[in-house]
Length: 496
Image 1 (cartoon, rainbow, N blue to C red):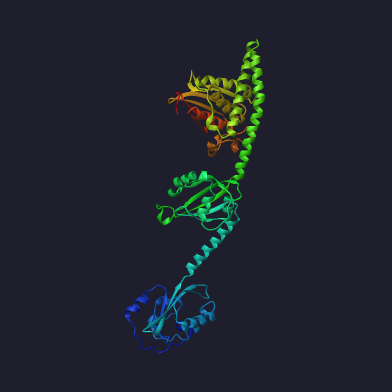
Image 2 (cartoon, one colour):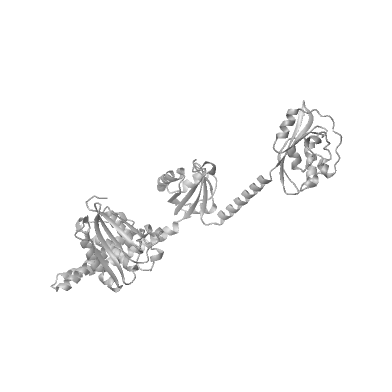
């Protein structure tokens, strides 16, 4: 260390020291404090940064030639451990081996990094160089990073959701313990290969395709797949990941990804149990409905008045639709929604809508709701009469559940752009925009229209039947409130 005049250390007369001016200029311009001493521990060169680092008020050139032998002891109080600082200086000087990046802490809390370089010329020791750098900011940042990492590890360790990290190439570099539990495999090395080994072989191709279409392009990755666990069971996992983008180069490929693993096994088991229940209940319902239908047909064969015959026809028509509904429940339970069977023939959609409104009339009267069918003339489509009747029945049933008293439900049938459009609109509480598309999911009921009535299957059946006809169905929110469901059907066979 250099003597510090401010600490009351007297400076001896400066001896003549041969100094290369180029070396002095280099040292003066170096970042950090630099002190060059000769073999007798006299100052050869010191820069301004060194003086500022240790609070020395004298100019650097005035310190040249000063004796540093007692300077370490005189300045020891500047450091957190004065005795340890002096002892370490003596040890370094006695050892005469290079020291790089040694951390020393000052009493004020600042952290310095120190280098020591012994100078040997022709195997003769000719002095040494000290280099001090203030790394307080860096150490503070590293401390914050370490603290953040500890918090992250604690959060990840206590979370039931699995957390993982991928590098820029999509290889797993970290999976939390809960993540391994979800995958059903123990943690260990070769993270990526162990993870892929857990994926069900039949799902590997689909998982890779999902990743290639999103991950490398910096998009949100979201996929569900099965895993084969070590205990022999099959699990269901949802994996989501977001890209990590370098702010300095936002157009470049992601530098990595951070993601989560969700265990869906219990949810899928419950769904399977629900489907099995629906299938069993549907089988049980089919038997009495078949008997009702059979006896209705027998009654139709007997002479009856015009009104009685009309009522029996309504009973028979609705019983047949109930049978088809039970069949649809069986299809839903088997996930065969795309295989809705059709008996196609030219039918008038306006006539089917009028018949559906007539069947729903008693329920509408009981609810004090008006039914209005609009649409002039005929709107012919190639379709299954009973299936299309089921579509309108389901839409009316859904609307009647939520329509307030003294309001109106409109069934509108019209041609538009070569297609037939069927629209059922109610004046109920409506549905949040975020739930509109989900209305067609099996068993889904929007919070604003959840009353406990219904199964949540009606609209999923509507969309399935529309798709089987080559059409589509969507829901939207009218400006005046309520809910509207629109079904579009092709007016020619084979339309899409």
